[in-house]
Length: 527
Image (cartoon, rainbow, N blue to C red; front, side, top):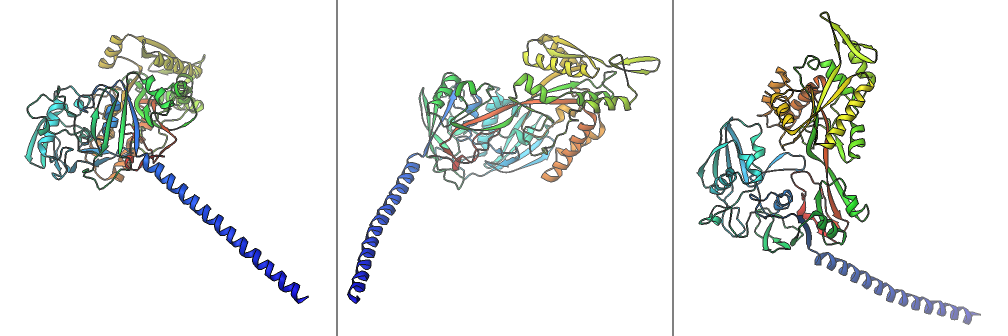
């Protein structure tokens, strides 16, 4: 009996030893396999320290000569400005170490001479003067930025004084053009030079041919940052359709487009996207000197009666954003709250009733000074702009539903320009391309299109020009917005939508806006 017990214990021990040995062998193999897999994954990430971008209709990589917006977008990886903008369109220092507004028409800017161009030479104040002189020649998209610059004085190697011919609200936002090196182009014509342009940025150009531009990481970049991506390949395409096809084939990692029919080209699957509000704003202008439209209650009633969501859905297939104020493209100065009256047909009727208007025979009218006033308007629009014509028809239908009569005035291009110049209209559908700054003087300032006047508004517009404190600036803009909401001198309707499309294997935070699609690029990598 005792022998059997001992024998049983011996067998259990042997089995345990064998089991432990087998477990150890398999555990070690599994651990080794895991380590190999981890090493392989690390190698994969290590091997893919490159990224593929794309440009269609390429002309030149020189940022002061190109007319291609995507060249300017990608070019910010190579060429840098004095001041830049963050994701919320707030001004930030870049090559400038400081700037100051010394009078209504003069600015002093200082730079750091330790910043190097990609050929190893130092950034100097003369480079700023050289760049502005090139822009003043009028061949660049950025030329408008320096239109009011009368002269540039080089104070010393690190300081310039920029003088303006007249005050420009928020002029510092104009200093976002790329700076180019003076000495690099000595002895040759900048506009015809065949040299590969150099900058001070994160990447430098290593080669250019008819099919691609190759960028390499700039190891002497002045910022204490080392981008994960070592090489950037910019593929060049004749047509945008070629770029779309290349993305579908996996040859492009990311691109930016405002194409509303994009899904017809690349489908809906296999990629990620980030959308943001564009700078193309359409609005309904009221002539505030018109006998009827000078009345606030009439303008507010019209605003209440227009369903913007209906317009965006019916005319633009929801490919545009409803707009509530000129700064709702993402400006930090505008709080993201609805500032229009809001669609409310009953409120539209109530506003008119409260101000003595009567609804008779399906129309609004009012007896005043022995005359009968009726709400009848002509809505002017360009006849060759099919989308704005459709918007005009939509607005006409909406207003007539509540008894406001509308006739659409279809204007030729010449007639439209005359209406803008002479302000000879009642209501007009028009549009602007928003600047980056929080300046709204175009809409509310002296000689605005709407013939709108408000002394408090004029005071606020002047105050915000000199305010540096962000919270105080926001407070002042809230006051501007409140006046707009109360008086409705125009109705902000909708703005375009822009999309960044990226391959799902591209890792990193993508937070684009109109100024730049590649914020946080230094942390991106391709898996």
